Image (tube, rainbow over all chains, first blue to last red; front, side):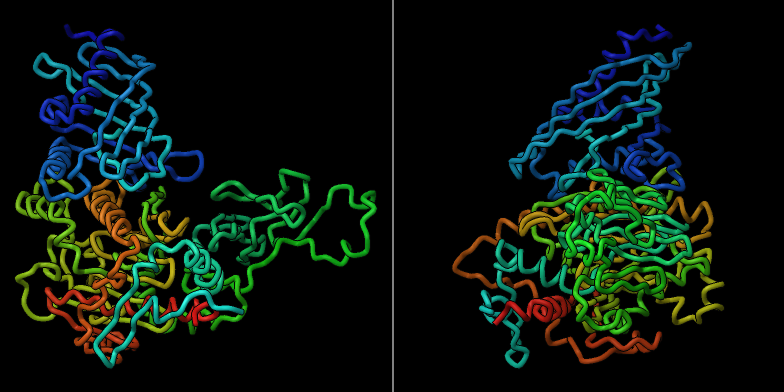
Length: 165
Length: 448
């Protein structure tokens, strides 16, 4: 199947969300192309987000899955107190729209809410915003070549890691 | 006036006995916190922002001094002023935006209007208002803060008029601000994009952590491992690191690796030797800076420097360059406003390098700061009232601390009040004493 339907796309994003909820990082990393973009822009002011990651600050910006592997390594290392008691997370993803679709490549917009219960501090937070995914067909499998996370509530209570958005 | 707290119950400062201890109550007590807001944050100089945040005529930005909302505004002639961001009429916050450009501000509640010098330009239907004589005698302009000043683009204000001049308040620490500003003849700028986070602990946890070399290898081993790995890999794909190239934090480093300095009015520096190498984004200017500023100052510009201007500004020049503003909300809640500071006109390559390192190290969504803020929160739990109220975290370096500076401060003709020259394992904590002495000075009115 070299063309993705809206239904396929939604199922793909739900599957990614579930992997993060389950902290199932190996299959999650395997979803990404080796040269993927993983980007959560910051806010410049009240109403606009940064859009040039080389000249402006992002909350997270990686080009290359290798950097996501570093994030996972830190989480699993046993040497990060922020990752010692793992938060419980549930992703709710909706409003999935195909914005571009061609042979072997699609772009998707969606909305997300993550409910994060920080077990350590007994505090529960909700993060919400929009995803912009680009998926490409690589050796017969759909891979994420780009994920942009537009976080709306960007005043971060203590910490926020890749599994929380 | 009754004094609700006794200093000796809060800070046990007996240098002759080799004792410096801080009571947990300083981090926990809500009554003490309310007094701190009034006397530390609203009772003396605090940092309010950079001049470049309101660069053009009629630009403004908003913020807080303690609990008081403020506006920093540039008028049409380029003069910067600082006002209380509240309409004199009913106290409504005049400007809700973080920043913008406006010649006039109209209060959203009853349309009182002010220009960019803070002068009242219109009181709606004043003539028909049947006001008494008392009203006409009132000043209807926006309230100016008592003191407002700039040092090399860094803006400070005080709600209390009885403070030393800004020059005296910053004192010799100005030379450390120079090291940051002099990185470019065009000065500094904030990289667009601000990052705000909160943590559920007292503001002094952040105050201390910036100057706390002792925590680095304990709190951040997960990040350090990644730095080591990236340094070995040296591939274009991974985010490169400056800290990895320095040994001031490596436990097996020998000789002097850095130290601390304390300045009058509570400012402190924690510093470490960083080689002048391509591991820093500034390397492209190494030769030019040596010619412009001399080799000694150039080398200082490459050193790791964590500077606190008491009580609320921190500039961390290490893995990248960060400006932090501490905003206490409650005894157990603090908001941090953070920006990436950068020299204007640096190359696209250097800027990219600076930003990438910043995100990984400093962001609450990165790989280092979350391990700090979680520790602050865990510390806050341990601040509960208990039989042993005195913390043991301000004692390292006590016997290494000397009056005045050392060879390194002499290199840039800087005269700190006290200094410690350290090897990698000393990790001075005696510099925190400087915070608490300045804290006690500002709190003097309410401490017996």
